[in-house]
Length: 282
Ligand SMILES: [Zn+2]
Image 1 (cartoon, helix red, strand yellow):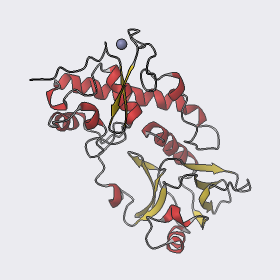
Image 2 (tube, rainbow, N blue to C red):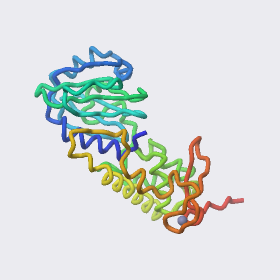
Image 3 (tube, rainbow, N blue to C red):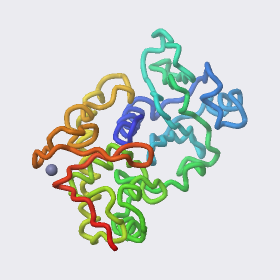
């Protein structure tokens, strides 16, 4: 599943390759991709034809392309890709929606093997689509307010990892990046958010921004190609993970074997020495 840095890489690709261009037509190959556009595929196509894309924006894992006052809103789901390329190239069976442009240049294809992703038109959504207004800013956005988010995080009587994954508090942090950031900040995932010192919260968000920045750098090599892809996860995933997916392997800081605990039907990876488990209070 693409995490926030991969979605940001897609946004940058869209910014480079489709902003400033005018939509000629929309071809819907699989209506499920437009299930959130309740007025249906014909309305979607009619609403976009002739409109010029004026930006490529993101909040959390949602992307939107303003067209006038409205916006084309996209979520990649588990396996979605937005691909820009030669309009004459073969159409893969996973392409759900295709946008062509009046300049007859590269087209934009929404490909989604598992069909959890979706596109829709957000009326009046150029600034911020209403459907995603409840999602908190993410740590890569200029609107991210570290002091305010830290205070809200410390008001939660819940484990720190659960708080990091709460999209109404801070968006875009998934399981992998939460574990990596907690390792860097040397905090155990079960520590109570409300009992963290303010300085510990600040270093935790600094760690989140660091791992995101490194992932963006690792994924940045594809920027110059005429291809926007999130399916091939950035090289960061294989090369630089400190704890995630490394149960039993030595901690990159102290050599202690990494521990895997069950966590919300998934896993939490941590170093037992660098990230000591909180004492249970009696
Ligand atoms: Zn360690």
